[in-house]
Image (cartoon, rainbow, N blue to C red; front, side, top):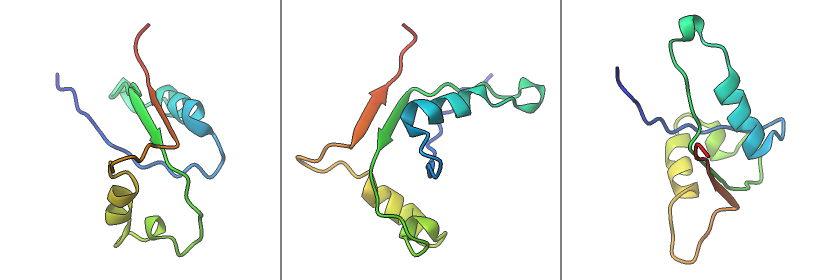
Length: 86
């Protein structure tokens, strides 16, 4: 069996916030239980959304995502949560 670390970009249009996104990802029923995802870390940034936002453009979204979450000196995320088993 393999274990994969996957980075996702989740656009939270419904305002689920971190815990809601975690619950949705972990509680989705996958065919034949082929995967069993466990959210271990979430970072959040606030953006002013419009249809023209670079995250809404496949050609620009990867770079915009990297820039949005780049670790810069004296910059902290809006919210970060590390989940553990306890």
